[in-house]
Length: 202
Image (cartoon, rainbow, N blue to C red):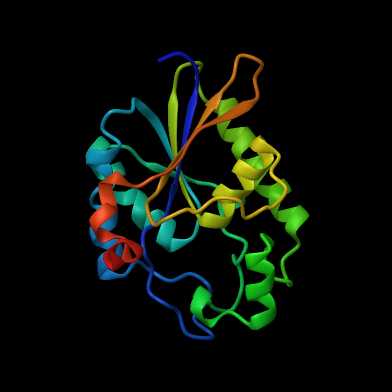
């Protein structure tokens, strides 16, 4: 394989958290089952490093891969979701009407500084890429908003929320010869196809 590769992996399905519990839920039973599929799904990649958001749903998703590879997981706070530090995790079903409108128009909820979020994520990813060897693959366990922010920056999309990202979906970024990043694939979910709620409707 020529060139450095970044695997951006969304966390598995978390529980909802109640107000006051913090926006940091753990994985649900379904989420644990999804995460257990990742070691096999990622086996074909020569992973040299594992990096995670500090949030529990991301760290728990990384753990089966870390165990399978006998590696530790480095934590980078800049790869946290835009809700990091909020009082509780709000599932999309419970978002306010104004925030739903913002999300549907491709923007983050109104209380989030979108530019600062994009800059934070970009700086974190830049450092991961800079620390990687020429031909290394790094797996980053993170969040839907973070993955969208990266695809948005690399592809210069009009909207920040520009791609569908499922639980444990794998998005591949490659370092180009010029040193920038290119998007190779978005939201690979073959490994959890039968475990994704939206696929149960067919």
